[in-house]
Image 1 (tube, rainbow, N blue to C red):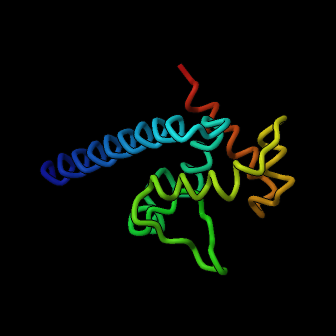
Image 2: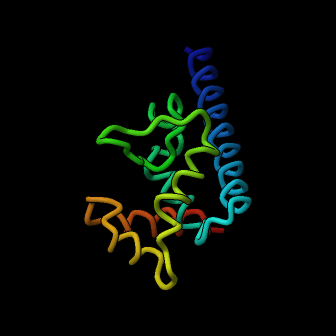
Length: 127
């Protein structure tokens, strides 16, 4: 029983570490590609991928739930996913409230999408 608990705790720690590393890498890449409102976009990636754990993220590097021809897009790496987001989404942004922009372009069907993003950001900024 004790070994099971230790193995479980080890696994949880490894997953948490990997998620933190991925989050920081994505944050840096968003800045490198000059994505506006990178804090909100990072929250989108976390929400869309279940903290970078979904199959569409891990197998297909799709950070934002972007679809091509009605199917989730597949990318060779997550940097390409960010580049596609920049090309398809952030390039249309002309200023103002970014979350309102996301709502206006119909980014997500979930009526609570922006509220969920705000909660992720609030959690991130908690001291």
